[in-house]
Image 1 (spheres, one colour):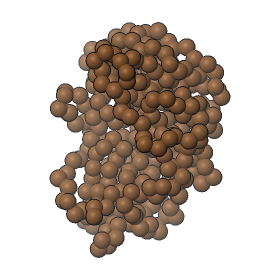
Image 2: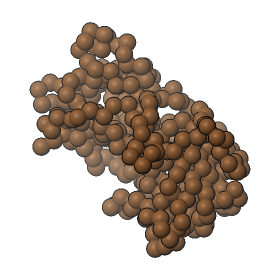
Image 3: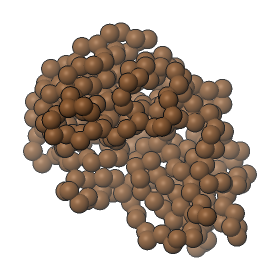
Image 4: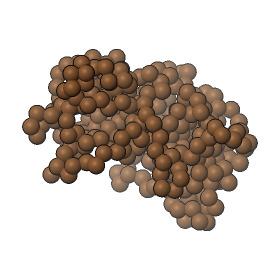
Length: 331
């Protein structure tokens, strides 16, 4: 796995998870961003088919104006290869040389190309060297950025990429898989972006997105964001871009949970999590883009009616803008 990911500041999105790296600039297209982000956990045989299926939907999800570059790396077996999908201004490059691909449904797809010492995703051709003082090391998660450069460890010593999910990714995708998403009649299933608003240092000196890491009580339910961060549901919560001013918060009846939102797809107060005894409910607070939920085995997202409380069960997934959150209820 690459051992350093340098991110240039910017208003687009850079995400890293497992052996995957993504740059995407798609304002107003959260479904496309989420579908691409969900592919970051895919690796091994069949990864090119997963990206091919996403390519078939990219134009519809992104409105034809989005730019992105997504690369999935595989260093298992002592070899280093990659699979990439890109469109618009996006361009992956290895050691500064743009990757060559085949046209697929308005995108470009490349499979089985050899990795080198560096891997770039972003607009145009790779920047030879990141300017000093503006890049930071992204270990995992999603942050705003105008491009990213992975400094790859030697293939012979690199650990294997994170294995794919135990299920086999289908040729089209709905909310039931973290391997990707397809257009659905109700809402084409996105997956999340960073749930953070500030950075936290990791033990190896890298940086991951974070806003709060409480010491969760063992008996309290938790919200687990897509970058692994956890919020304890030990009281009522209001989630959104700027939830501090919502009446539930100002009245002292709920705790605000701000979520980073570089593309303005979240409402200031997007949704509320409320406890009634052991029951926990999710309520859309009249958000612009809606609040969606999907059960552990569901294949489509269901949009909630504003103001109507929806009971949550263990394993339910919540979709707020680009952010996917899993609700976990202890036994």
